Structures are given as C-alpha cells and as structure tokens.
Amino acid sequence: MHSTEVPIFDIQPSSAWRLLDTRELWRYRELIYFLAWRDIKVRYKQTAIGIAWAVLQPVAMMAAFTLFFGRLAGVATDGIPYPLFALSALLPWQMFSRAVTESANSLVTDQRLITRVYFPRIIVPIATIIAALADFVIASGLLFILMVAYGVPFHWGVLWLVPFIILMLVTVLGVGFWLSALNVEYRDVAHTVPFLNQFWFFITPVVYSATLVPPEWRALYGLNPMVGVVEGFRWALFDSGASPGAITLVSTCVAFGLFASGIIWFRRRERTFVDAMGSGGR
Image (tube, rainbow, N blue to C red):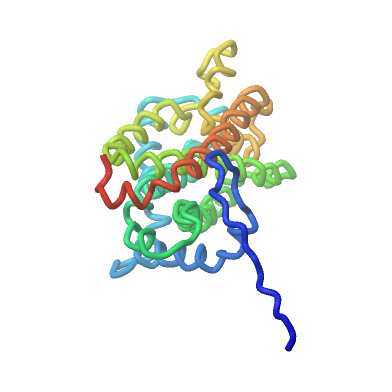
C-alpha cells in the first residue's frame, strides 16, 4: 500500500499594506472583461442612438464652449481653432469625470456580488474605468476627423499621446481606488463626487489655456494631474509652443502618488468591505 502525500497549505492573514497582485488580476481577466462589457451594455441599453452618445456629448459641449468662450469671451487658444482646442481637452476630461463618478459608486452598486463570491475587489473600479475608456476611444475618432477638416497637419509629436493617455489612466485609477474604497464606509462620498467634479473642472484648463497662469505658478498648478494630461494632449496634437515640461513632471509625480496610495488604501480597507456593506455604511 503506497502512501499518498497530502498537500499542506499554510494560510496566513494578508498584510494590511500591500500592493497590487498582478498575477491574481491576470487570473481574473475574464471577469474584468465581463464587468466592463456589462457596464457598456447597461449604459446604452434601450437608447435611441446607442453608442453615438459617446460622440454627441463632447460635441454638444464643444459647440457651447466655442460660442461662449471662443466667440463671445475671445479666450486665447495659442493659435489653435477653438473647437479643436476645446475638444482636445474635453475628451480626457469627460473620460476622467465619468470614470471617477462611476468607479466611486462601483463597489456599492455591485455589493450583492461582492458579499457572495470571492474575487479581487479592485477589479470592480478597474472594470468601470475600462468601460469609460471605450467612450474615449470612440470620441477620439471625431477629433482626428475635425483635425483633417481644419487642415491641422499630423506630425511625429502625436506619438506623445500614448504616455499622456497612460498618465490619464493612472490619475483616474488612483482617484477611483480612493473614492470607491471610501464610499463603502462613508456613503456621503457619493454626494461629494458631483461637487468634486465641478470644482476639478474649473481648475483644469479645459476652456482656457494654462498659459493664462503666471509662469511662477505653473509648477504649483501642475499639482492637479489633469493639468498635465490636458496640456500634454494639446501639445502632442497641435505642437503648440514649448512642451509643458514642469507642469507635466509635477502632474506625473502627483498622479503616480495617487495611484500607489490608492492601491495601498484600497487593499488595506478591502477586508472590511463585506462587513461595511452588511451594516449599510456609516
């Protein structure tokens, strides 16, 4: 009779301060895809024009901003046609605004799933951000069509869009991790997010140029990571003036700080999510 070795598992509590487990996320990649696709379908289900809303919303905002800020207020655009000036900032901004709003509420929305099945909870805000990215990609096609219509030439600098898109995603993920984890315990976070989005919009150069800020204040202005994203988009697309070096450097540091601290905070509070949801938050 042969002895059979029985595997022995040493189960230990996870550390309160831990970074992202990328191998575990990869194992659950199909769940990320399912949740993201579900969010996209729910967003446009039973709508008359469907995915066209992804284009209609930034176009409507672009038209309004062009009328009031471009024509009536005469806002300086560094030589860029105002519709392109506004749309190039609206695309990353609306991606950020939507992703922050939906990721903040994502854990509460999916609490039935979270309280019944184990999976890395951080998947939930990640999936909502991927769903928001789909709208961004679709609407970006309109921007390139308008650039052709306005006769704006494409140049090698457009390749810089890739790192600026990464900077945008890092910023969104960092803010999303923080707010989604906080919203589980403090439900008034959901009421704060609309105000936060409005305030953040006005301190981001969407309808105006960052050149309006005095040079000695621009590094401080870059503490808003979306400033680096928006100015980077315009510089990469239109080659407008000098590269936003100092602003981009500061914004990048803040964005990665938000990202790293957001992961740590989320993973630290993750073990209390089920209990907090069972008690209905604070």
